[in-house]
Length: 85
Image (cartoon, rainbow, N blue to C red; front, top):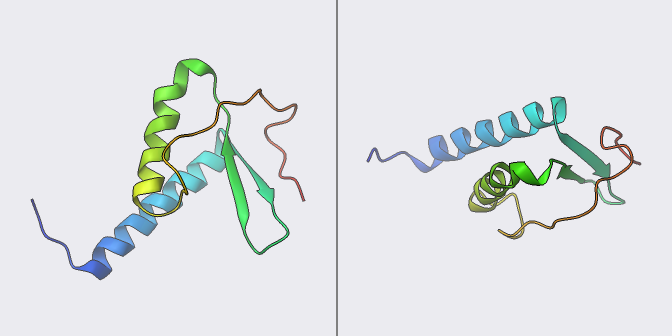
């Protein structure tokens, strides 16, 4: 294994997280603006892609951007491409 400086590791993780979010917003993600200064992202896929969703959730949790490892299975929203205010 290659040992990385903490600053370089943090920069690489941030680039990976930004890549996931930007590509996700161009594809399957949607965002909800909350009453605070943050945005909550959600990802909607069919059940066949649950391994993909679980993998993203694990990565984001390990990097500190997701509160838990287990995702929630919910019914599909009417318009998954709209950012709600």
